[in-house]
Amino acid sequence: MEEIDLVELLKMFWRKKFLIILITILFIGIGYIYTTRFITPMYTSTTTLVLASNNEKNKSNTTSTAAEVAVNTKLVSTYSELIKSQKVLSEVVTNTGISITEEQLKKEISIESTSNTSLINISVKNENPEVSTQIANEIASVFTKKVAEIYNINNVQIVNQAEIPQAPSNINHKKDIVIFGLIGLIVSIIYIFIENMFDTTIKSTDELERSFKLPILASIPMYGKIAKKEKELIVDKDPKSPISEVFRTLRANIQFMNTKQKPKVVLVTSTVEEEGKSWIAANLAATFAQAGKLTLLIDGDMRKGRQYNIFNIKSKPGISNYLSGIVEDKEKKEEEINDIENYIQETDIKNLYAIPSGDIPPNPSELLLSHKMRDVIKQLKEQCDVIIIDGTQCDLIADSLVLSRLADTTIITTAYKQTKKEKLIKTIEKIINVGGKNIGFVLNKVHISEKKYEESYYYGSTQDKKSKKKTLLLEEENNDIAKK
Image 1 (cartoon, one colour):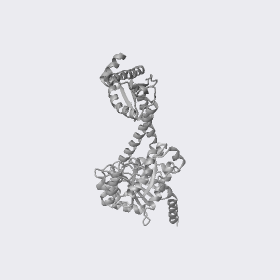
Image 2 (cartoon, helix red, strand yellow; image 1 turned 30 degrees about the vertical axis):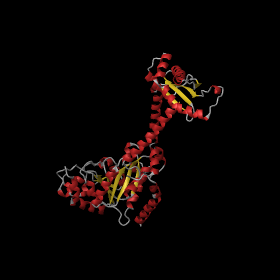
Image 3 (cartoon, helix red, strand yellow; image 1 turned 60 degrees about the vertical axis):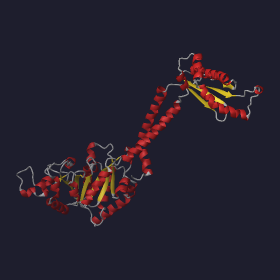
Image 4 (cartoon, helix red, strand yellow; image 1 turned 45 degrees about the horizontal axis):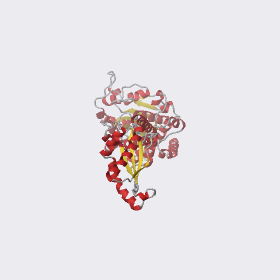
């Protein structure tokens, strides 16, 4: 079981505050309905008896000796049983004329003796306040007479007559609502805690770093209210946006992942679908091109490649056609088919070229494993400053594992509250096992408020913010060296 981070736990509760409030309000509503509609009002009337001295000379004396109190205290338990006896209850039912059985009446009676005293409280609970009062007073009267008849003594006196209660004894609306509200609060906290325990998705860059000890290259926020057309190539359509700034930071971080040899081939992959790898690959390539780098984007997803759609270029022929040697145009000569230059298309972004995925082949993994693929990457590295490869997801598909062997850097795209840790562990193990190098993460789809998106740059974790100046300085230094 993972170690519980109290700070992260509090942050999680804060993020879920609206759910906590909603569940609490729901329970308050249930409590209100329960206390007002489903509880039958019951009224309790109480009469108090005292076991007094039977000594004639002490009748005028209001005090009792300690010995008398001790004797009377022992009689309290005996008298309590006598009150609920059939002899007393049957006479009470007869005298009051109330339609109730002795067993029912016995359930409505509660007897309480005050500790270390001679006092007995007889309480009667009933739906009708007048009936409860009548029964309580009649029980006291009948019991007093029965004691005199049975024990031939007159040591029971009525201290307080029962009075008609003005409010139900079993209903306290405020108390019930508060209790239900507290239950709702506790239930919501327990629910969120349990949900978090079983939720193995990535929820922060700090969590990524703690769990995998690999560099976090960028944390990319959600699109917000960006127009649909601007979403795909946001670094080109909205270069001043916070997301575009994050991609520039990502570019700089990739350049300085390996200080000995600058990466020329960058693979962008993910664990499963819908984590945003193609979007990241496209914008990352555009960012390198904007920096004056001759950039080539290869759509290595020969199953569901969509870079042609993002850049509005022809979908084929593509990399699959080049590797298989099969093209629709039968008039093309073998030299043209085997020339990679015939598959490269120019995009609308200066310095950026792309090779689409092409036709869907029956054996994409085998094509990527071929010598032809290794040779063409080696050839293109000599012609381009940077090559970005948009690979497939690694779950159940081996295409990106093959490509990771050819790449200088492998970027694994993870999605906020979507990518599961167990799948990510398997992906990392697979890439390492085949010889993948310089693995880093990009956390995508991070939720931030619209206000925060519009007013400030966003870099994810505190660590990202602290490294911003260092990254920009390194980037400037790199540009100066390139100029020299």
